[in-house]
Image: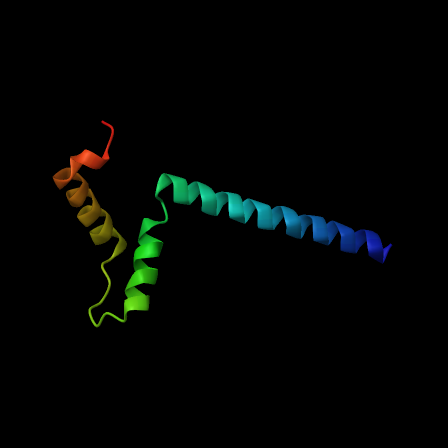
Length: 74
């Protein structure tokens, strides 16, 4: 029955992959991945300064939203 075990592992792998993609999509829609994207951008640009902590990032983002309310519906 090794073929059955292999099929089960493949099915689990497909489901795990689908779930990871669904979570990534949901986080993108909700904006939960903004900090990760900020870190990727920070690394890609080769900035010499240390990146903001996650707390600093969200505070800065909130301050920016307060200063630019035209992008929000409410």
